[in-house]
Structures are given as structure tokens and as C-alpha cells.
Length: 253
Image 1 (cartoon, one colour):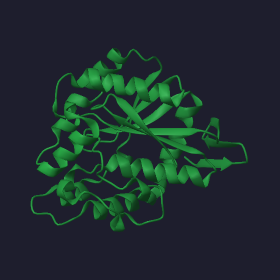
Image 2 (image 1 turned 90 degrees about the horizontal axis):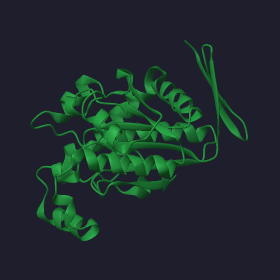
Image 3 (image 1 turned 90 degrees about the vertical axis):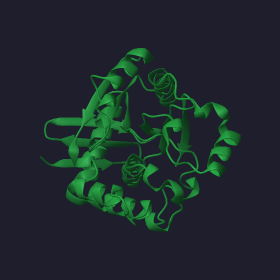
């Protein structure tokens, strides 16, 4: 089915079969979240632990109340977006079934008490199995930048990004914040924020090499969707949901 996305000086609209939706191109907001807390990160060098403690305090080491903390972070993100609810996009090819809808994620939504919540999943946006296996296999030499480059190329094929952008527009038209989520925690300092949402190739950016596999595809998916929205004139805000601090980090890009 053909997806037609058009824009003018004030709005972005999508026609998808018999469905038509339109949003203002001002203050377009999308988000991503990782369900786990920072304390779940494994094999962290001591100097990074000390840096995190100095930056965000010693509380990051606690693993308690995972669903409650994520619920607070979700509340914060939706409030920051000034929307009425959210669409939680499960982007995991693999991952803990505990964090799927119907289990812990549904519990989080119940604790948050936020109305107008929907759940969504489509495998076309998940990293391909072969790429995941190459990146995660023991002894792999693939850097996160290389992984990100290949995943972005996968997303650009077969109109996958247009599919994601169309769904984002539909969500926003219903006053729901699109949130791409997976398991991996929000890791402060994993990337250089000055390099994000630029033309700098993923392979040439800084990614914390000592935590290679802690880098998450959801960040790349959000950036690729966001950059495509900008080509339609969107003034873009990214919310990075952080259950460790029970908040969201707001970035205007």
C-alpha cells in the first residue's frame, strides 16, 4: 500500500490507503527508552563507574523497583511532550519477554496511570537477525559504529523509514508520543551528543568502545526517523527516557 507524505510551511501530512493524518511541523516530538536501569550494565570499567557516580550520584548502582522507576520515567516523558499518551514501539528482534506488553511493560503502564497508551510492533524495524548475530557473537570485531551503519542501511531499504515516519505522524495526530523501546539501559556518555543528528557517518563517531555491546539500535532508529522528519520541515524534540533517574532527557535537534 502506497504511503504518501507531504509537507508545507506549517504541517506534515500522510495519506496511507484510506487513512489521512496531519500534524503541525512545530514541536514534533519522538522518544526512545531502554527498560533496564544502568545498574544492569555488565563489565563496566572502574573509571566509568566513578564518572557515573560523580555525574548522577551513587544511586545508579541500585537495581530496586525497576517497574516503578520506569513508570516514573514514562510519566515524565509524556508530560514533557505535552501529549495525552504514548505508543510504545517494541523494537526488539530478541530480548527479555519480561518487558513485553502483557507482562512488565503493561505493569509499568498501570503504575504510571497514564491514559491513551497503545502498544505496537513490526519486525521490519527490528535489526535483522544476521546483523545481530554478527555483532553479538563472541570474538566479534564489529564496532558499534559499523553495526549502526549497517542497521541504518537496512532501515533505508524498502521504505522502512517512510513506514516508521508515517506511523509517527499517525501517533502524534492522536496526541500520542511515539516511543521506540528495547531492553538496554540508557548509558550516559556512550556517545558524543554533538555528533548526533548530523551528517557525520556512524563509523566515524565516538562510541564508548569498552561497552561495545551496550550500544542500542533504538538510538539509531530514532535518529534515522528524526532526520527524515526534518527533511519534511519538522522542528524536532527527542526525549531519551532514563529509568535510572526516573526522568527523560530533552534534546532539541
